[in-house]
Amino acid sequence: MTKLVGLLFIANSIIVAGWWVTRDYPNKGWVFTVSLLAVFAGMFLFLQDRATEVTIEGVGTIKAAVEKASEDAQAISALRQRIEAQSATVDLVAQQATTAKGMAEQLAQKSEAAEKKLVEVDSALTTARSKVDELQQVTEFTRTVLAAQNDDRKAFDLLEKWANDPAFRFRSEAGAAWTAVLDEHAKSFYMSGFTVPWKQGIDPAKLTLADLRSQFSEAPTYLKPALIEYVWERKDIAQGQRMAFLADVVAKDGSLNAVEYAGRFLSDALDAKLKPLAVRALLQAWDQKKGSIK
Image 1 (cartoon, one colour):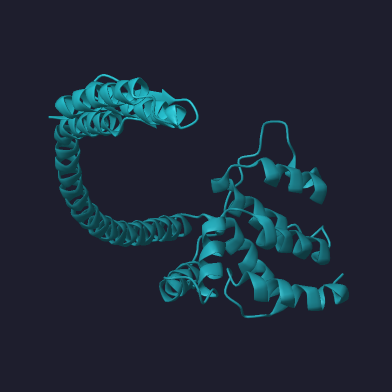
Image 2 (cartoon, one colour):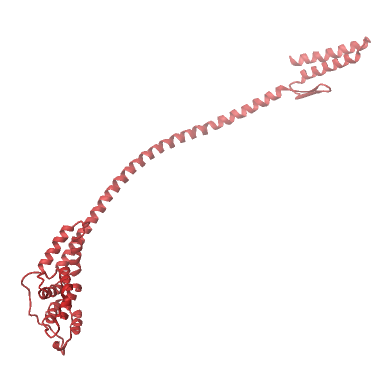
């Protein structure tokens, strides 16, 4: 229909222009211009599906709206195709997101359960450590008591330290064990009249107190009570020197049997009436009187 109208515009324009010119009417220039415009208009209508633009001098350029609409339609179609192509990917991503959310919730539940288990484990470990510490203390305490009962001076002193420590778990037990060892070495009957097995060639009567101290420091534990008794009975050595020797044994020796014999003789000499292993009280009594003893 558009092409037919275009042909009519062209034919009529040519016929009118020719008729006007052959009749010799005035204003031929205007008629020619109008006819030319009509021809171009007819050509535009006839060629609108093919022409993209028509330029008319003095009028401008006419762009076909059809091409623009066609381009927009193509762009929309391409966009639609892209969206349709990506819809499967979007669905897959959504599905994966849903799955990931479910997994995250499961992990959160498992993490919460794991934290509860950890709290329970920590509590159990704390209890276990407490029990282990208690067992170690019991073991150490038992070993110390046994050692003190078997002539170990350091163990005896440690029991006394624990007995005076309010923070020690077995304070009362330590005090009881220390007292038991103290009393064991304070019995009214005890051995005496020892014979010292001197080395051949040694005349003990010629040994000075310094020599006797040296002999004592090198003697085995079982011979120490005999040497202490021998030194105390050496009346040719000044009493003050012999008592100083006894006080040194009480203060420093590692054998409770040696401390017991030295403590017995020292307590009698001081008239202190103290138990032989009452070390602190014996040394205090000695410090008070040693200046007056020759």
